[in-house]
Image (tube, rainbow, N blue to C red; front, side):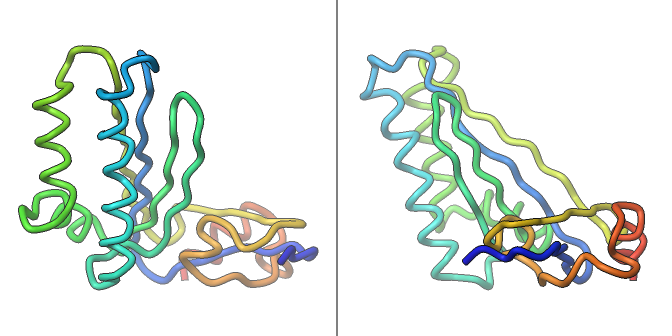
Length: 157
């Protein structure tokens, strides 16, 4: 469903933007990169089934280097998930280090950003709900929220 109007998204309180992905350096070594690539869907299923773990929304794009954007409620929840031996991430990380480590066949990467009110802005025009608009609340980008500066100020409240 495409929204033709100008919209912006807001999310109450602090939140975390987590970017994660992999890069297939040697595509012919399927047995090396496939286990890494197939671990993420298991983690996402687990996180979607247990919203109390803190993942609010994620989206992924596929190419030689993949990109997933995740929105988390808090840094504490993201870190707790990463370290929990009873959940999907830690065993997948151990398997990666055992099977691939630093041999160069497949790369993995992530970046983590802690976001506070007033530290972000966004706008969506002719778009379906997307990104922060799916993790937070969409509203018209009008009045005080018409400009990027106005949206930054409005997100402080």
